[in-house]
Amino acid sequence: MINPNRIFNIKTEAEFKALAIEVFQYQFEHNLVYRSFCDLLYKHPSDIKHIEDIPFLPIQFFKSHTILSASENDVKKIFTSSGTTGCITSKHRVSDLSIYENSFTQGFENDYGAIEDYVILALLPSYLERDGSSLIYMVDAMIKQSKHLESGFYLDNLSELSTVLKQLDAQGKKVLLIGVSFALLDLVEAYSFNLNNTIIMETGGMKGRRKELIREELHTILKNGFGVQEIHSEYGMTELLSQAYSKGHGIFNCPNWMQILTRDPEDALSIQKNGKTGGINVIDLANINSCSFIATQDLGRVSKNNSFEIIGRFDTSDIRGCNLMVL
Image (cartoon, rainbow, N blue to C red; front, side, top):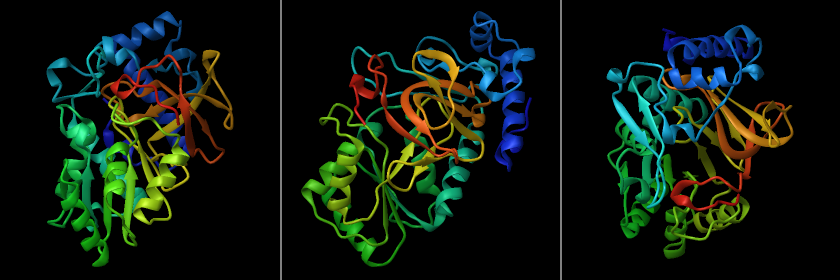
């Protein structure tokens, strides 16, 4: 078993690459589904010299198989993706919740500073209305870590949220408002703001409640509505235990234990050089007890400094709520 502390103490690119190959070897031995997938590709640990050689498991496998590098008896929580009638949801079995908690805490604080310093306001109605959301688990933990009594979830009580948000911002408190896109749009359509001390962070997705918008259009509406210079974003998913954050312009940065590669859209096994648009492959070393090497259905581009942006999705993929999203 690999000590999770090693994952969260990665300092250099060389350390990341070495540990990624070690994690691959571990999951090859302990994850039966991933082992079978690698066998079908004739990929063995002896063939893996670089992270680009590692097979990436298609994310759809989380809908049809048990993806686990630990004993099923050890599973403490099953996170599920959102979906409507007719959708098969993903199931992410988590055997060690402390790893997830360390990942989202350190990942956020690396970019934004101590969680306890923020008032955390959450506008996530579509997530609160169902069980098994990893995002709700994360935000609930952040609310509990916050030192401010005003922190909490808001469902449909937009009037109260508007009042609280304006009061906190006027008091000069550091505020994080994290919300799903359609709910943030509902808020700025009903109320006007001119915020100076608040971070607005969208988690993406209209959940079938509104027409999908390209990112630039969505962020322009939200910037004007909240009176802020930038809209922040969180990139995460049910099948991962880590998040990337954007402080504006849709440019995301990963924590040291997470990295994005792109694959050739015409050849799913071929990893591209940075700068080209392709399918997003995620290495999430925090996902050690599941699968750390996942081929998503997102399209994106990685820059030379390892930051990345999301361009869109493969046309044939289903997304949250079974809607196709255009970014």
